[in-house]
Amino acid sequence: MKYIDLTMSIEAAPAFEGNKAAEFECLADFARDGWNEHRMAMDLHVGTHIDFPFHMIDGGKVQKDFGLDDFIGRGRLIDVRGMFEIEVPLDGVEVGDILLFWTGRSDSAAEDSDRYFDSASSPRLSEKFAAEIVRRGVKIVGIDSWSVDVAPFPVHKILLGGGVLIVENLLNLGALVGREFKVFVAPLRHESYDGAPARVFAELVKLAAC
Image (cartoon, rainbow, N blue to C red; front, side):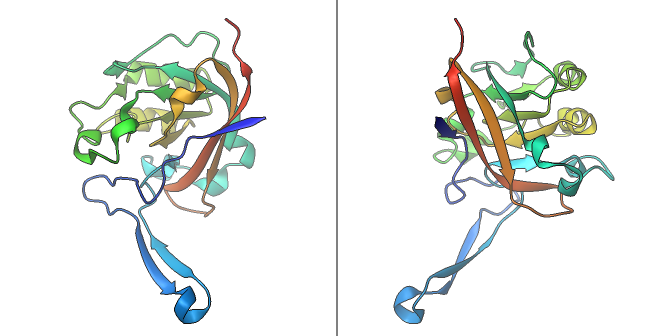
């Protein structure tokens, strides 16, 4: 059995304009105190993270409103590299699937954060396509970019309002080409907020049929 880590390292994760990158503070040093301990402070939407409906929907659901099974499902990789407005056929997509959109954008995120967050060039799902994803009963949409759309974020509102969770800033989606896989999203547990940093990984099942 093989697993692929799809998570961006917190230390290397760029922060959206106006947000802070993760900050680490040393509380104890082994040479001085006999142990190591650090404090981390970060925005809930830095690095690989999940958006809950409360992020964009007034009074929307938060993490405590979802069960563990809501973060696990059959993965479907959709290659959208080179596309600006994403709208593709969803043949074979079933209720409860997790769709991962491979844009290739996160490959250079750490080296060029200005380009990474450039709204003008960012790929985005169309509103019509987002509505179809909701209609299909998809569980989660994930993307290797900072967002599934740009301000004023209509696609966020369509997906989250329709019960589809969003995972952003993924990595390594190219490793899933030609594979059948299961996706696990493990958000940092809290009760009542708009999002959470998450460890996301895929369990490879087998080579997909040609």
